[in-house]
Length: 185
Image (cartoon, rainbow, N blue to C red; front, side, top):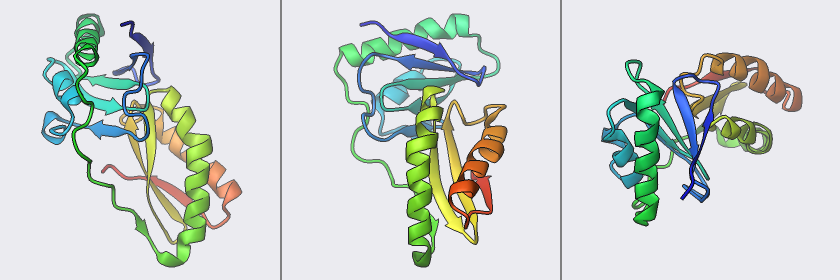
């Protein structure tokens, strides 16, 4: 098994591509081993010293290291853990995770559908290429709430991406949108 590694805009995060489906459809973002109990892969990665966040994408795994760790020591350990997991043919996720709650008024359903379509077709592919994801969390009174995951979580450029890129695009295509804000959970 050959696993490629790519850098991301976040220097504390690397993207690992095992050459096969990881999540297929959907994503999973784990900020600690405590919240990763239904993912054998994430638990194996959190067992490594220096792993502070695990993000599972369609065909990649994004790892965020702690500040006191160096990629030169951690990278080979992550590669080994991912390889061992897939060679043993273990499941990535056991059962179903909890669905994220969305804060949306029923009368805004048409606007929300437009927002989600733009996020799915224009934004998510771009942030996935950088090892992250963006999740819609709500729309109220012209304000879109989004949650950044994976390499995008904590990335120095995520605020600029959110404000200048995503907010401007949504305001252009959906005039009802006045602002985009990041939610942390």
